[in-house]
Length: 365
Ligand code: M6R
Image (cartoon, rainbow, N blue to C red):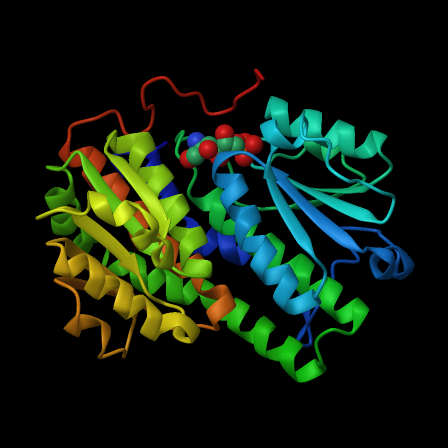
């Protein structure tokens, strides 16, 4: 059932073009997103939302972090993001005009479900984004937007994450259309770029083997850093979680501009730093941050956009991904990071699909 792959994780990484395509299917018509078949919030409901809370755990929480940037940029509604185990106990301000978006691959995560129930009790509207038909989230949320990633077996989440990002883009564009925050040309540009993502993801996967030597280098270390700014910061948080989870290598993900407020003290000779630099708006700033760590002896793997000739000048090694609209880049940028963790785990001879101490679905609080 691994279809010729050594591990479920690798199979699932390679299934991402299909997972993205299936999650987009039937939801874009004539350059606009129409989710009328999926969710029946009325236009009035959607126009009345004055804030959005994303609530989730682990990888799904990282999808929520990306969701904050996307919704705020495209829809101009304020967004908060919480890990479910914190949300429940911090007495969040939830009103009937709050939309709570609960993100869960399994739809069974105990803390996420408890947060969903709290939100409903407080009168919020609840949208569930889940990958499992018939799961508790799908049954209990007011409305459900399915991700169509297919069964995810490996404990480390990969195709569920990219599908969650797609679901979040779709919902944001649906909201943007209803609320008029984007014009037709902008909607068209986003939908066209979304439809190109499966093919672009495929081109990264075709070069997957090129990532193996970097991963083997990293596998010899016990500590490393991921840095990024803006959306790249949300993506490196996911990359760092993946690496810890399956390769047992300690890593931290840092907002690159924050390093000099303390963590730069940990940068010493030869420490690997993975620098994600796909966001043009902060590219120059990112390069300055790379130079800061290089000056302290770090060995930097830069991940940038194809066609960029600048990044290579300030890093030790470079990987590139195809260019899309800046807000959509996380879907592509996470793939090399997933592969890096996968090959690092393999290089260390670990149990990739079933890492120690972890369960696929966390049904205890
Ligand atoms: O099923 P869920 O999406 O609710 O699961 C949430 C987390 O337990 C999950 O994403 C976890 O962080 C992954 N193992 C990370 O790869």
